Image 1 (spheres, one colour):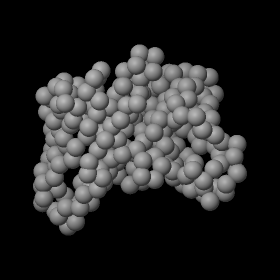
Image 2 (tube, helix red, strand yellow):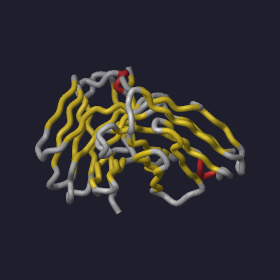
Image 3 (cartoon, rainbow over the protein chains, first blue to last red):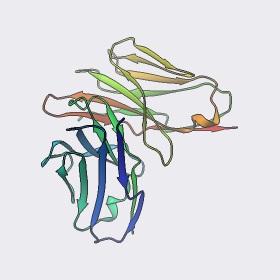
Image 4 (cartoon, rainbow over the protein chains, first blue to last red):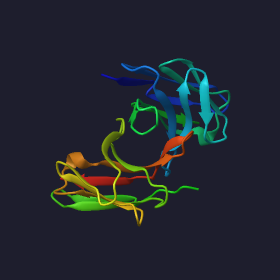
Length: 113
Length: 114
């Protein structure tokens, strides 16, 4: 069966520091992968999605970036965090190839101080 | 801009009460609507995927209906239990061909008091 891992679970970082969140999927190959964020009082917002290694699409302009160095690994990064980057970050995968059925990881709670 | 709205934002009920929430979504170019249940510190869990107008789905005490012509879906919980406490999210599946994505509402936070 497929499982999705995210780490770390929680993170407190100062403004201006770098960020790296990792997501890995097991039990499937060539999944579509997604990064979402839920900021306080807002819905889950799609940040990035990837249909394959090295293929990244950005949904929202921001100071975050994503990379997919391996088939089942998706990384969310920032060179300099802003206070507004605080939120709950979720990684998801979809095995249909169409984004139709998405399964979520346990998430990372990021607090930027 | 595609907008998905959920109401109420939060709901506090007593154990045994039945409750329902609403999800509003664009009625044009409908493909599918998803309901998720999201407990604190856990992954959102898929409850239902609804695709046809008039669809009605049920899982235990939870059921959902869909009206694609007017762009709304209701989620019902019969006889709420404390373990039903969670945020309930709906998501509109936007089928854009090259860019397919789920557009989420802000969720309804349900708290069930024993």
